[in-house]
Image (tube, rainbow, N blue to C red; front, side, top):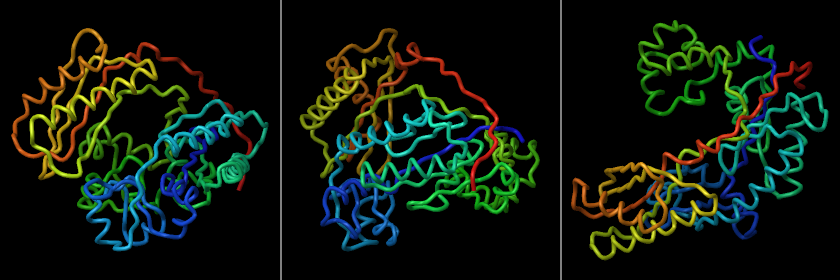
Length: 361
């Protein structure tokens, strides 16, 4: 047995959409999409909408074609963050080893927990029950010996369910798992694996380490290990933020210099606001442009000193704008800052590794 940890992955069910249905009873039981609208993309879809094939990151036009009676709702990120904070407070009642992945999901290491509960399965049930009682929302959970298996497991009994992959099952569990369900295997990689007749875990397991590294480079070793239930990534409560970004999709394509100038200035001010709240600074600014035909262009500039204010963002972004290869209408503009001072503030967290006796059923 390669690891003796108890890891829980908690994933809220259709979080943004569920919050909207919670706050507006008139939306309950109806297919809704958060975001989208006239020109955007879907940020989240309710389960009622998913039955029609509506998915996050889907253009709103496609979503409406698949579900003509789809209701678009503008996102309210302040509200989502408010509820997310309540949920994280619940997590911290059980362990300080909490690694948030986003507003709606997190890993918890409960090998040693504040409640002294032996079964990780029981902890997950209690956490899900408290989330529902305190927020009115449902969550799903996966429990196993490592982050990879816990994350895969959390998707099995969605929505409002949980799945434990017991230590005695970690060798055989991945065998019948479709390759698309492996965390870290995206659409492009899945298609490549299908071409190689790798459809399930058992097919992946048949490949040697040398073969997989030859086919997938450095990722080959990761695939070789996870299909054998091996994943040593620790739950890191102090995840280091790598970048901060703001972007805007426009209702109508824009191509006028004055309008673009105003948008770049507005984005620069919004970026400064986000950074100042968290005392974050960075040295690399990136301009993102998505054109009318959906082609994407990015250009970055790195300086020795940290950017200090929105005026500097604005000036640099305008310089990057002048370097663009195409002079055609655009549908999206974005600014992001990376090479952050968060690396300097990095805190070292101690990962507890204590053998468990029981995972629960």
